[in-house]
Length: 239
Image (tube, rainbow, N blue to C red; front, side):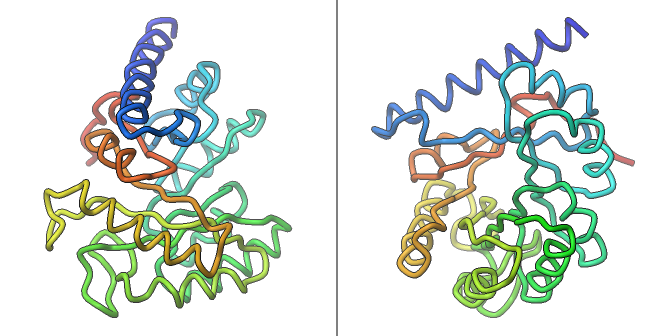
């Protein structure tokens, strides 16, 4: 376990240096950017080591993996972020441990999350997931609402009992006009964030950027970056 702790510490230090350098280059303070470590496919023991090393925000994308992991780590002061596409039949479970659901992309999900949060007597932070490659009125291949659907979803979240509108999330698109243009994609997200904050001033969170493109996200103004591989290593192939 000492070897694994050392490996994680080394990787975390490297990611921290990348974030700090990106902040300096953008004229931002380091504390303006929160690191979320994506722990999907890795065991609870890694989560505990990360906590020892100072990590306080972790993310998962599959409830069947996240729920038992969160239970095993329930004694730790961690904020759990759910970042995967979420089916309504998993909402009750996710609402029992997640602090923030970053993948809200349809009205049906808003209603289900609200009901589950109220029953669990919890408040869930919600991010509207935006698909920059989706046509108007559609959803992206990897989840997310088209930009023209942001306002309707945001209003629904803001009015829903048990939910808190925290902001926006995106993944750099692989297709469409922003493919291969991460900086431009993230800058477009910041424009959407500015528009959102005009009506919802507290919804100032922008979750964007991962291991390969966190610098572009920080440069654009993202408040949170989601880093997995750069901290935990290359994930084993599933199946």
